Amino acid sequence: MAGRRASRSSAPPKGRKRARKKKQSPEANGTSPVSKVPRGPRLTAARQALRDTLMLTRKAQGWTNGAIAAEAGISVTAAKDAMRNRRETLPDLLDQDPMEIIQNLLEQISASAGDLELMAVAYSEAHPSAAVGAKKAAHEARRDLASLLQATGKLPKELGTLRHLVDVRAVAVQIITGLDEFLEAVRAAKLPPAKRKPILEAADRLERTLETMTGSAETRKG
Image 1 (cartoon, rainbow, N blue to C red):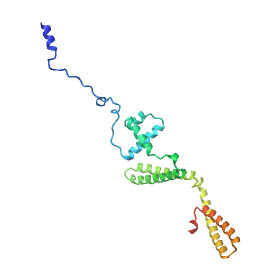
Image 2: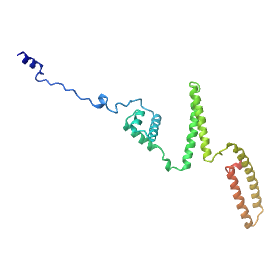
Image 3: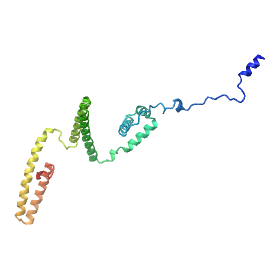
Image 4: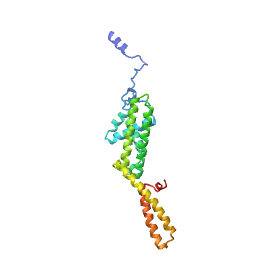
């Protein structure tokens, strides 16, 4: 009798159901891959552009999407979307004119040098070491600018030859001035057209050549 009473007392009362333990979702118990990604503060547009550019660089270096996402602190899906959007905003250099590419590079390097100079001034009192670093970076940008100008032929490889170039241009300006006086005398002489035409054409060709040497036709006006 005592055994029967014990078995009856251990059974749950009628009308009551045992509470089933609810299964938590992967996001709730922290097992989801997305939940493991640290969520930091919202990035500004400038920082986001830098982050997305870095992710494209990592992709070109052979990193996997998972490693790229882990470094950026975002999910793999978000990393793929960010890289795709960033790639769409970048210019297609293969379709651009070479001179346009060079011009854009020159403008960007020149702008970077100016920005670094401003940073050096801004940090000169509060962070002197940062100001020195910005000043050095500005010098590096100017060196890159000079190298690019030399590569495109706008500056000579040996900058010491500029002195000779200045001398040649000065002589060319003097020749152009004398040539203008000669042409005025030819026109005033009222030569027959058959004789005057070849003289004027030859003088015009010479004048254009000299203007090319001086860099511009405006040089002789100064």
